[in-house]
Length: 296
Image (cartoon, rainbow, N blue to C red):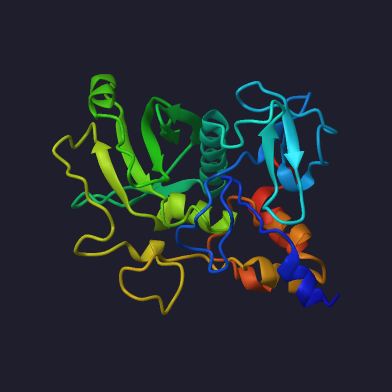
């Protein structure tokens, strides 16, 4: 069997949100998110690609259920509850999204906020804390330092049909909140999702404590996104800008190995937004994107 045939016949890979990565890396795939993170007995997390089949690693889900690693030759690898059910555990999905986003934002140390006339659109952050807001995964970020510290809640929308919670809870607490639409990025590689969370995806205010009259404005409104959020040249007006993150096949070719091992190189976040991703070796890409391990 040739190497090309091996790549074609291998099961598709999932990103850190649990969605199958599409060949083009953007758009909406048919499959729902599956469980892709398991918690080891020592409390650290293990991604499905590194897990052994079955119960060998003694992993559990975010909801507390024991997990089995399903690693066949056809379907994309994923975890399932040991009871045989709940391959799409809601709690596991929301926590995976929240932890991924928090890690990405901490590494990037900045985020684009919805446009307010006369205000900068890029803001720095001191910390990012994963948090679940009802049916939405998200992050609570802290801006500023010392006595001048402000919080901002970021709700991440994976499916457009879902309505975010009302602004009342944030208004009563005096905390700003915005919604980031990740629906067109959920089947992308991790690096592209991280960039979408921080910069590229459409976003709107749910509530702004300092400008409560602010309306829901996304970067597709007149005026467009700031130049800092346009990561690639030549994309059509209105199409989501993206980082130069190589796809599965590119990584496999660069590594001289199978696509399964190359997917380790697309984990979230980067502290250098101007890096030429296509010039990096898989080992260096992994180091830049997600550090030395998959995180706590």
